[in-house]
Length: 215
Image (cartoon, rainbow, N blue to C red; front, side, top):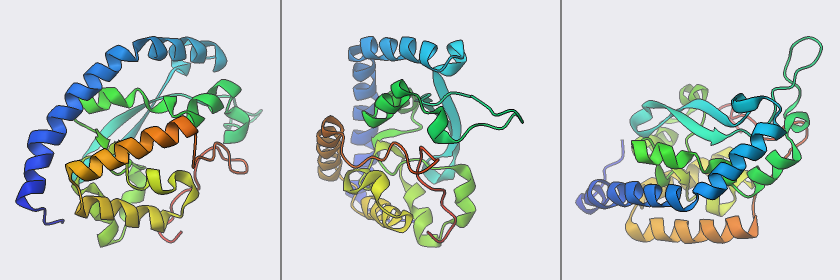
């Protein structure tokens, strides 16, 4: 458990959360045309009607409390003759690849921020099944609210190892502050606009390799 300073506790409760809520609300209003346009594109691209628009998955949040994370769905549900899902790369459409590379797929998480499950800045919420695999030090990434972007995302994103990612997450937890969040926010905008540090496909997988407790 991280021993936060009084100023860090004050920032997280009295500054970070209120600003996050108002920011998410304003962003949803301003980005509503993009939000709607993306929904229409995915409705047709994923060939599954309204079921092809959003992707939900349970993720651990602050203090490892489980919540349902929301994203735009960038892959179809196409299956082989035996009923098994096709490899990620085969299900990732051109529309989905563009939406992922521009980080538009993350926009529905603004709703998670409104609900308090997430923040704009913080360690990315990962899969629930990873929880038993973390070391005691790695568990500390859950001492703060997870974010849409974080210190690890602006320092390599999918192009760094899991171990390095967790080191950066814990570094963020230890140094959480307004200055740190502004730095991550600015760098995130710059990298998203430049479409840097993201692998949309890796072999047959369109996502980073699974964490196994060692890699």
